[in-house]
Each structure stands twice: as C-alpha cells, then as structure tokens.
Image (cartoon, rainbow, N blue to C red; front, side, top):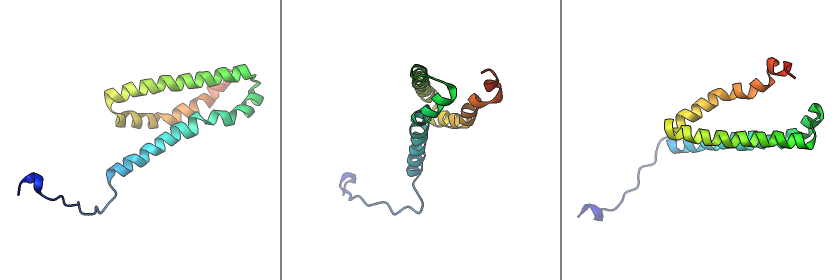
Length: 114
C-alpha cells in the first residue's frame, strides 16, 4: 500500500484545551475591549461631559473627530509595529501601558492647567 492510499486515522481526543482556543478567546477579549468599551464609550459620556465642561455641539464633534483620528493613527502605527516586532510583543506592550494612558488625562497636573 502506498503512502497516499493509507486511510487517515483521527487524532486521539486531547486531554487539555488546544492553545488555538486560548488565543481565540484572548483575541476576542482584546477586540471587545478596544472596540466595544473604549471606542464607543464616547457617545454615552457625551451629554454629561457637554454639561459639565460647557461644550457646544461643534466642540464635542471636534473632540470626537480628534479621538477617531488618534484611533486611526495608532491603528496604522500598531500595524506597522506588529509587522516589525510581532503581534504578541506589541499587544503585550500595549496592555502594559494601557492603565497609564487611561489615567494620565485625569491626573492632578493635567487638571491644574484648566
């Protein structure tokens, strides 16, 4: 019997979860966090933010435009970095710096400038 004529035998059932499922779950959580929580959260915060900061619709729109332009620019930069260093390193670095990036706009030194 030649090699091409041998019947295929199924792999035995694995004893643990395959690593690809872990990567898929983590990737889904990253997409949910980046798109679901961060990017679309602006619309929920807009009315109270306009009232507290005294922003009109033009200023709020400019703020939203700057937010989405920054998102676009960092998406391009992140893609280029992932191509150069690999996605695992870029994602790990990004998640390590995320708390600083989220908390720094509300730091006392930034608020003093207002």
